[in-house]
Amino acid sequence: MAPFPRAMFARAILGLSILSSAVAFNGGFPYGSEKVRGVNLGGWLVLEPWITPSLFDDTGNAGIVDEWTYGSLQSLTVAEEALTNHWNTWITESDFAAIAAAGLNHVRLPIGYWAFEVGPGEPYIQGQLPYLQKAITWATQNNLKLIIDLHGAPGSQNGFDNSGHRISFPGWHSNATNVQRTDTIIKQIASMVADNYENVPIIAPLNEPAGFDGDAVLSVVRQYWYDSFGNIRYPFGSAQQSNTVELIHDAFQPLSYWDGVLTYPDYEGVAMDTHIYTIFSQAEVEMTQAQHISTVCAKQSSLSSFDLWTIVGEWTPAATDCATYLNGRGIGSRYDGTYPGSTFVGSCTGLTGSASTFSSSYKTFLRQFWEAQVISYEKGQGWIQWTWKAENADEWTYQAGLANGWIPQNPTDLIYPNICG
Ligand SMILES: *[C@@H]1O[C@H](CO)[C@@H](O)[C@H](O)[C@H]1NC(C)=O
Image 1 (cartoon, protein in one colour):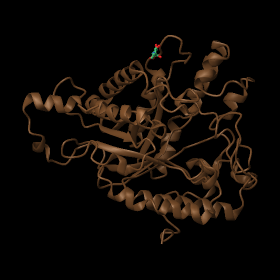
Image 2 (cartoon, protein in one colour):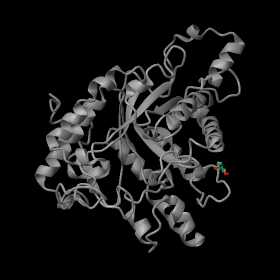
Image 3 (cartoon, protein in one colour):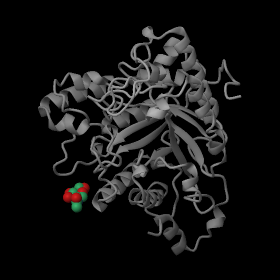
Image 4 (cartoon, protein in one colour):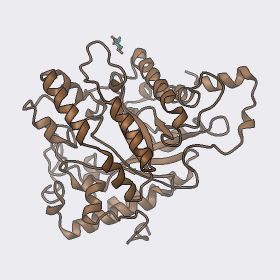
């Protein structure tokens, strides 16, 4: 299908020359000259079992594996009370202050479609929107730029638990109603923040669509990125452009797959999000520490040469999939051979959980791997680590890295500036 975004249409009917917009894009942050340094607020407005295992374990129900089943497989009153308590406590204003104090300039906030609209038969519990508003206020007060990241779409765009619904095959792309519902939500978000672009400079219209499932997904995703351009960049019902950046995702394709998509000068105010993990296959968890480091260092040239601003919007210092429930509640780890079909590489003891169990050599590696990634991702537009905090997986969290010394208080204070050679 031929991409035909609203924006092009608006320009065409008004007879505007596309080339007349050859001025630098004026967004809410100097993208293109200053580096994005940030952290995700994972596990707050979208539940993830591995980030807050206690929320799931406390249900006493092994079938509750995602936010969908959190709503459908237990008493509504119990679920609402637990969720409200979680929303009130997991992230507060003091987290924003600590993130700013750590020298970061962005936070990326995942939210599900169900915060905005729930369809018949969908068991999601609502109530997240006031917390999105609080987050915007707290970001503003702490001089942090907030990225609104639609992390779950109707039908699920990837079937991951972190899309809200863990299912074997995603159901978003194959159902036009689901896509239209998502478009409507993006329009709603875009008009909500259009006048506040200095504090909410970016909307990411869909996290991690399942491009690995092939062209049936990718063709829908591509059209959706074009349609979202219209929705995010033209929220005023006129030919006036917003200053809000659309952050598309590579859908697990090489960046080159997206060559020429939404590029200047036909389009402006578009950035690319890519997620770099080196732990979600048998071959990757078998890598040595040095191989983990060289793998991320090898990303530099594609990040620096891609024609959209490229942000590594998720990555981790973790080099194993050992964190409890990381592969899903009730599912084990490849690293220790407890994941179906995996082969034992080593014991997870001392590699996940509390940093008090980490050896000093492991903490040194976490520092090196962290620095290798920061150095490499700043060859693009910068980075946003996954994630700020987790109950019991310190190797992943920015907060524990700061507290235990493998993340510096100032992200430019590097001990291994030549780690990538
Ligand atoms: C498509 O999704 C909508 C919900 O968005 C649902 O009501 C409808 O039954 C789905 N259609 C098909 C063919 O599955």
